[in-house]
Image 1 (cartoon, rainbow, N blue to C red):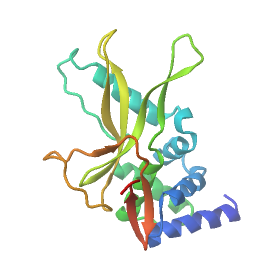
Image 2 (image 1 turned 30 degrees about the horizontal axis):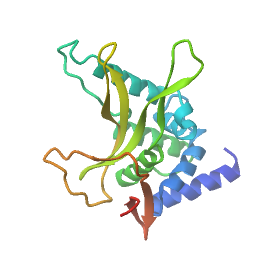
Image 3 (image 1 turned 180 degrees about the vertical axis):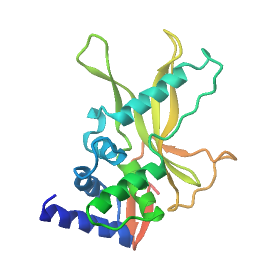
Length: 219
């Protein structure tokens, strides 16, 4: 990393630390931090996904398709299915702080890490999930990622087509990445705190006077 890149990284790092960070800063921050990460680190994977979007073909996509296969096994096995986030908060915090330390920057606290993850979730909404058709050079859209929010959580949610037999297909929805909702006062939909899923609206994580806010079109 040359001196100019260091200065740019420090700029966005300072914004994250002083509470003036938003999702646009998150995009630039990921672009700069990517080259400093280990090749197989979760931060590198998140950065690649953000930059490549539906052209991305790495670990996160593999995780989504592995989760899809679990749903396709419903009715074929008695085992309960469990869907986990692709990366835990602890994994992201550890890898990001390790990379920052390598860049001679102080580690981030939990609130700052949460703001970073929230920005990544927002950036990745509306990414199409594509699959290569057998015998064809063309790809087909079988799902999409959406922004979701509940009283307690902010979630990157995947909605994807699954086949339960050769003829019947349906869509399932499951979480890919999760952050704490420290930014919006959301009323519970039900006792399970089922998240609100934004399919048609594009949500933006903005910063207003040093506080992250969830901006929803029309509200």
